[in-house]
Image (cartoon, rainbow, N blue to C red; front, side, top):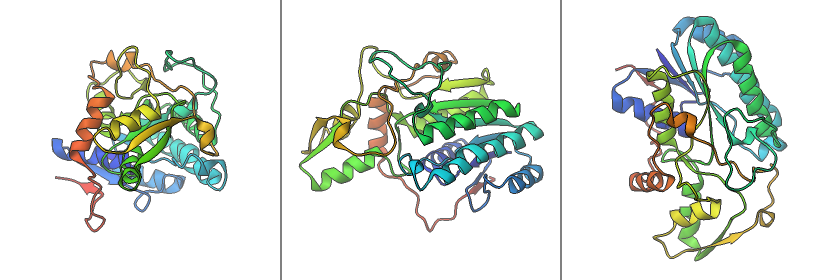
Length: 298
């Protein structure tokens, strides 16, 4: 059995559609079916269903809220919940695939350099701290795991930067976007494909980085991303620095990920521009809320 936790989220929905296309059986559980913060419920669920593969897409990702009102919930989901899933997976011999984040890293990384999977972690936000503790809990559990750190996630199935920019462009002839935060966008489809690829090829366990690819000397900022999104519109995108927008959580200055380890598995990573183009052709595919979802046992 394949289990997807956080099945109704952006990545969980993407993963469901990918497995549907391949005709692969799975069970997708969101909080209503499986509250990962409840250890007793998690243990009972795993004992009853015996999943062999667990794609843990459940996470608290309200980065700014986690600095204040969401701090307790972030701790419960990203730390306690991850630990519960990891320990239950280890106990029954399941393989766990965990999604983590560029926010686990902190400090200044010069432009042109990239974060390696084994770089030291110094998170500078509550979100980064709780995701780092989740990573540590997975290692401590003894489970067979793949932890995939990603960044700047976008896709067709949930609120994200692409839809935000498109919405703003409907009513604004000019918008401003920060140009002093550097990284690379990640299409949720590419990430979902890599998650399954690691399992299907029985790749070496451990930590991986996955975003879409960029040209060797290319420097990418949120301004560049927004410009590419809106290049076929009449909206003008203007660059500004981060001080223009008040945000509670500190953002990484440069979170460009090194993809060499992921590429060495044989997985082909398309450019972020190509990924964005494919996503825009698909459009907004967020599911009809009236449609029953959560399980595929065909």
